[in-house]
Length: 235
Image 1: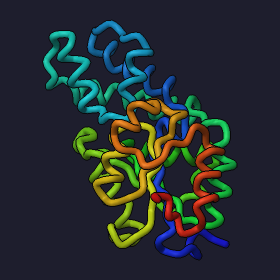
Image 2: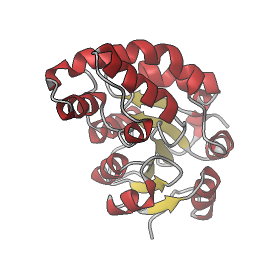
Image 3: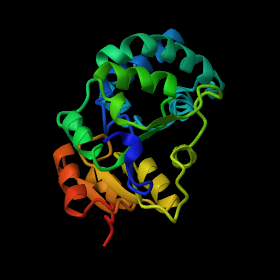
């Protein structure tokens, strides 16, 4: 069965970083590259991990402001970030254990799409390098132009439109690891599933209103399967 043969309401949207792929190393190294190129000292990588999922524009404005540097330099820092990220991301961004198997199983009975704050120009090559792109009907990311300003709610809305889905008259779920993902999914009336294996953790996801939590990719697969193909996850 091809991805285009599914019922139009059986859809699952996935965030990328922290859900499908472990991007902590690549992103933190490139964030520090952006700072170093501006003549600034790098941040501890553990601190930078907490920023994954937010827009690059917001991240660099905060990092620069905290150092007393004009936040208007954020676009320059983003340019330095991206010049390195383009090279290292496909090589230094592995998928999480269990993700390939979970996607292969879910794609049998559901339409799958990616809704990420990362521009498609970067998300696509990462998924392709891992062989995961074949499972997705659509990969939707924030626009590359405009230095990453689009919020996650808008990105999820565009992903739904690409799939031809009209909330709230559609049955679909959003799987994410940060509060941005849960807020975006709820804004569109989607069932929200928190990926606890990612960056945010259970407390952040619960506070953001996650309908369900999945401890691992295999747990996510079990949750979807036991609730049936119609994806009526909320009860």
